Length: 165
Length: 118
Image (cartoon, rainbow over all chains, first blue to last red; front, side, top):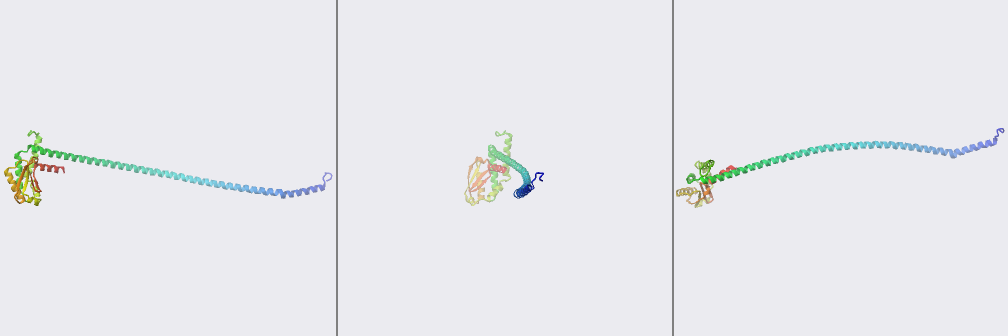
């Protein structure tokens, strides 16, 4: 060893020093670092798990949201269809009502026309009769002779004579 | 043309005239007067004067004959107050209180008109 220039006592001291340093370093530095790294790893794993969980939750929510949207679309479509159907029904009802009203108006007009025609006919008939009565009186007055009048008077007196009170 | 009328006008007048005359002959007025007689009121039975309207003047004989007939109807003697009403055309209109007999052509034409108007 002397030939190699190594002092055994010094080597021993250095070995002891090295071991001491190793023990100290292991105790004060290596173990806390490992613990810290372990904790950090655990924390990262937890974060990753949480992220996964949140992602899953987000997907779940997205699916739910899509479902709700789909349902809303479906309901909206149904409402539109219902409104369309109601609109058609209303349209039919309005057309039927308008038709009925128009028919009533036409019927009323016809009735009124008939009534007016009848009134006019009656009026014309009355006028014609009045005219005939008036003409008859005038013409008879013009042509009535005393002889005829006497005959009529005699006839009527004879009628009265045959009566019994 | 006769009396200034056309042939149609003359036929019309003759037709009406004939109808009214036949009414008298066939006593179509009788049932009407018979019905009226049932309605002779007590006031008419007490009345002393019969008011008679004719289109032409009544002769004395006609006047007397009519007085007798009417007296017989009301059941006592009546006197006749006669007057001329040209609008009657022909026939008689007699009024005894509220009892009226109207056999004039005028009223018969009016009745015909009323019947036609119905």
